[in-house]
Every structure is written in C-alpha cells, then in structure tokens.
Length: 256
Image 1 (cartoon, helix red, strand yellow):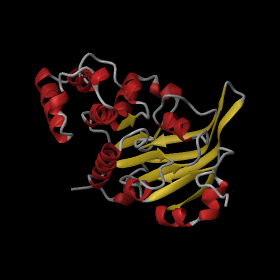
Image 2 (cartoon, rainbow, N blue to C red):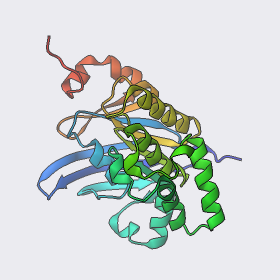
Image 3 (cartoon, rainbow, N blue to C red):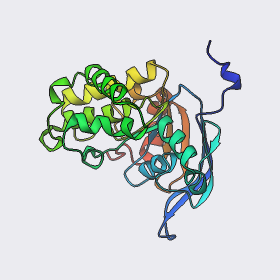
Image 4 (tube, one colour):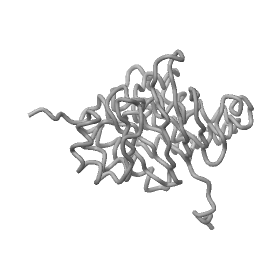
C-alpha cells in the first residue's frame, strides 16, 4: 500500500539558496521552491543563469553559500554527507545525469560502467550481474555492453550515462541539458526515456533551455533569470505562452 501523499516529505525543499564562486561571483541568489514526490519539473533559463549549479547543489556536489536544502525531508549539508550512512542513503536515492557524458563515463567497458554503482553498494556478484542485464535490456543497449565508452556515439553515450543511474534505482533524477548536442533520433529517445521515468513515479528535475522539448520533459517550469533569481514558477503551458517573460530571461529573441 502506498503512503498517503499528504504525509510524505517533499522531494525537494529549497529555501533562500545562494551561491558564489570563489566567494565573489554570484551564480544563485536567494532561490526558493518546493518539489513534491512524483513531480516533473524543468529549470529553464539562459546559459549562465545558475541551472547547472543548482543541480550540483541538489546532488551534494557543491554546497550553497547561504540557504537551506532538504531532500526527502533530510537536510543536505557538507557535514551531513560526511556521515557514511547518510551519504550512502542519499546517493542511493538521488541520481545525476550530467550534460557531458564524458564526465560520467570512465570505465573500460559499458558493462563496467553500469556495474560501478551497484558494486559500491556492496551487492552480491549475482545481484550486480542481474541488475546490469536488466538495465542493458531496458535501454536496448545490450550490443554496447563490451564496447569502451570512447567508441560510443553521442546518443549512445547519453543512454549509457542514463543506464549508470538507472541501475541504482533512484527516486529523484537530475538531468542537466539532456537533449543538447544530440541528433534528432537520439534526442527523441532521451525525451521518451525521461517521460517514461516520470510515468513510473520518479521525481524528475531537468535543467534545459530546449523550449521545444519542454512540454514532454516537465509539467512545471521554474524560470531563472540572468540575475540568478527565480523569475517565474508555473505550469509549462503558461510559461511558454508568456513571450514577454521568455524574452526578458533571454530564452527567445525579442528583436524584429
């Protein structure tokens, strides 16, 4: 029996999140929002507005200069993730697919890539092998299992990067510009994968400036402007209709 949604903690609770690189250069300024479990949310804005930094903060890769973050009701701080048990639980529930797949893929073969996460969970060899086989089949990449990552196309590398996260079974997925630099077929396949994860009840947060793909990627959009603040937050359809807003945040051209 599923839990009553009213009693479940938020998937994400961000309050007053600010970040400055080298304590000087602002990347986020007092960003606040909530995301419920099962939500599909897009972070949109022009390049440099802070989308990628915000995803890294949610994933505990960097930490805010100011503000408070909770993931599934657990405060996420550098000190909290310094605890081995808390960190292991957090990493099992949150998965990050980077914009550049080369950052994520480093093992000798695709099979080794997919095995990396489960092996670090301390699973048995048989369970790891079963997870790998299931994941390869789900993403239709069985034929790539013994190929080294440097021999993958851009679309193949993206699917394998998703596989390395899928095998861990996270509840919260973070995607950074998942459709960038992909050919049309690969782009459509990635969009379909993200939609399928949402249909399966996963919480999805996608950073993108691909407005054409936005309705398929998310139901709600949080708009960041070039001052690194939240400029708007609402249903995707309403955001896309607001041409003045999209022009102000440099997502569309306002020139005639």
